[in-house]
View 1 (cartoon, rainbow, N blue to C red):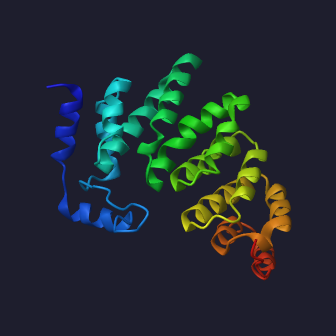
View 2 (cartoon, rainbow, N blue to C red):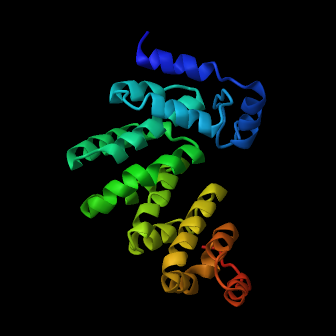
Length: 241
């Protein structure tokens, strides 16, 4: 039995019909919803992490098999293995190989949890190290695919932690007219995280764009501001772009 087959078998053995049903509801898998058609086996996140650690030495070809699987938890395990391998990489050549592989297989990150657990730890970190390659963010942020746009926005956690603000602000501005609530949450979340470290940059952004921000984006962005500032921005009437 190959390692990949063994991993899939051990994952399936943890199938929980109750948790699977809850996950199908939680991740919006109904017709027309953002996770439509996704398949769940009902594993908990700690269970997937244990399996990812146990099979941490899978080859990229084997990880690709996980990422192509219809089962959500197998893609989750594959992305967790990829993150672990990236973080354990000793050389930039190793990191580059995993980054390129991640980009090539980014369609596997087709729900918010899959994006959020992986993108800033791989793509974000790589682009902190290689700022001249950040044009990819502006291609993804303009994609018709919501998950590609979320990849671009959430990757900026790595920039924020590196005390950078420019990319966060530019990408958030490009999402002012996005139609998806998940993207309003993502951009507001990143602005809030930026504000924890650089409140002035957040305030400058709000002064310029608060009247154009979707309400969810605004509420997320101002969550950590002092109450007088929060109320100031909440009172601003929204304009439609």
